[in-house]
Length: 235
Ligand SMILES: [Zn+2]
Image (cartoon, rainbow, N blue to C red; front, side, top):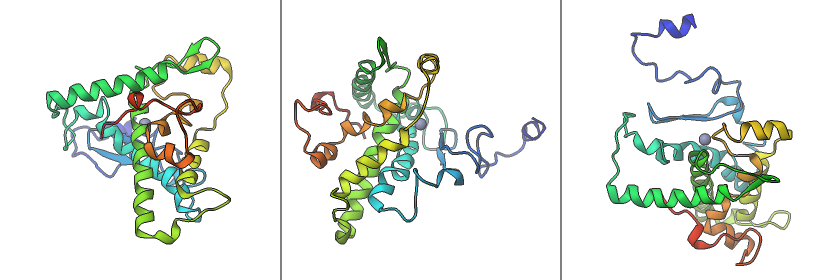
């Protein structure tokens, strides 16, 4: 507290971690801060399952790559978009773009609202929309980065254990959200936490990415199929 108080009236320190609870080098987490339009990836986050320097690049693009994409997207989701390039709160979007954005985010809220996490208990799409937008953007950016990598290094486009690079990418995203929580904790966090349950994050963001359908040959009627009119296309 003394350290925090001593910062008052002094110049802003931009190389300091924003929060001693959420991001320190020893904490496995990442964050976006709209006030300086920057992201924080603490050193502790750079270990499996989130990142492995020795892992297949297709895996790293949809794990740490998608996490970085997630944090970047926070600058362009429902609340982040209300801050400008220098971190001041200012609505810099045209009215037409803002209207289209809101219509797209409504699809994402609808998708989460329909997800039953426990019998009779559904997710809260409106509460979680910023995190779900960041996940959609994160998977899209991670997958786009993989596509660029494969264009630059065609030899990397090979099958490992029977899976293509796009398949390995989408599969690698899933285990990031493995978690253990009892029913009481789930019922308590659902109405208050802006982060959706891992069970949902594991699968839902990829359903907005066209490459996901191509990678696994998913067709209308399949369990993971999301109608194109329900998919979010924003950035
Ligand atoms: Zn987030």
